[in-house]
Image (cartoon, rainbow, N blue to C red; front, side, top):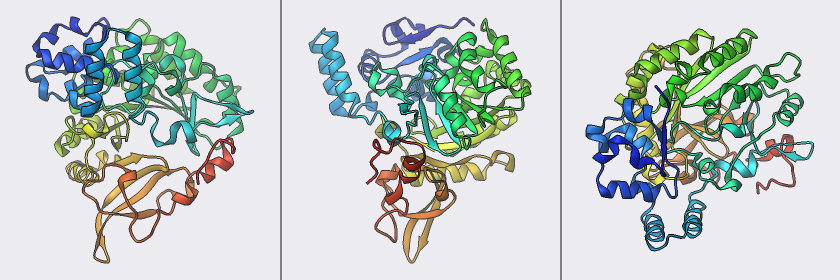
Length: 445
C-alpha cells in the first residue's frame, strides 16, 4: 500500500467523506482549526466502518467531533472562520483558545526539563529517576492524530509549546553524568514517522560501544502498528529498520516498542499481525498501552478482548491510562470510579498472562497514580491509590487515600481523606529540584 495522508487542507478528497453530512464536515473544519487533524489511507480504508461511521470507534479516534471544543470555544472559532478571511486573525483566535486548554499538562514545561552545563534540554524530559524522555525534532508528527492526544500541542504550529531536540550530543552527555538513568524513551509525536536514515542518526549515539551511559533499555513510544503497519512490510526502508532493530537487540540492549492500541479493531488486520511478527523476530519487545476514553473504548469487553488479542500476538499488556487533563478531556473523560470498574471487570475476564497490565493510572504532576479500588474506612468511602512512579522514588508503592467522588475525573479533582493535604504535596518537586533541575527555575511552594 502506498502511503497517503490527509489534513484539513485536503480532507475533502477522501473518497468516503461524501458519506458525511454538511454539518459534520463543517464541524470537522471548525474543530480542526484549534485541535490537530491528520489521518491516512490505511486508517480510512482498513479500520473505519463507513456504513456506521458515527458510532465507529476509529472514526471517533481520528476525526474531530464538535463536542471536543467547549460550546463557547466552538462558537468563537466558528465566528472567526465565518466572519473573516484573514488567516492571521483566525490563527490568533485559535491560539487564544489553545492556551486555555492546558497545552502542557502535569508540569511538563515547568518541572520536567533538565539542565546540563547550564543548558536547558528542551527536547528532554526527566521526571522519574530511571527514565528519560527524548523528543527528536524530526519525529514530532504522527501517521494519524488521536483526537484525545495529550500531546496535541506539539502539532499545532505554536513553537513555544513544542518539545524537540535536533542534536543528541548534549543528551548523551547528560546520560553519562546521570548513571541512574537506565531507560531512554524516544517519543514525540511518533519517532516511527522518521525515515531510516534520519532515525539511525538519532539512535546510533546511544547504542555505540564507546559511549559511557548506563542505558539498558531503549523504548520507542509509537502508534505505527495501529496507524501504518506497512512501515515494516512494504516501505522502501522497511528491511533497514528491521536490521537496525536486530543489531540493537544483539548488543544486549532491550528494545521495547511502547505500542498504542486503543481498540481491538486495530489488531485485526493482516498487516498489523505480519508487522508485529517481523518486529518480534528481531528481538523487539512490544508492550501495549492506551487511555480509557469515552466514545471509543469505555467498555470492559473491549479491553478484555484487546488484551487477549495482544497476548495472542505476543505483545505484553502494559498500561490502562486515564485521559489527561488537556485538550478535549471534557469530551473523553471517564469518571475515575467508572474507569476502575471497567478495568476490574476486564481484568476479571482474562487469564493470568494478560494480567501484566496496570491501571487505571493517571500520569499527573507528582507521578503515575494508580487507582487500586474503592473501599470504606471508618465508615467513609474512599479511593485507594498508590504511586506506580513518583518524582520522589520513595513514594512508589505507598498506598494513600482520597475522598470518594463520583464526579472526579483527574487527580486535581480529588481531595485527601483523613488529612488536610496529600502526603506528597509539600515536597512534590524537592527531590528532582535538588538532583536534576536548575534550582532557580523551579518553584514548588
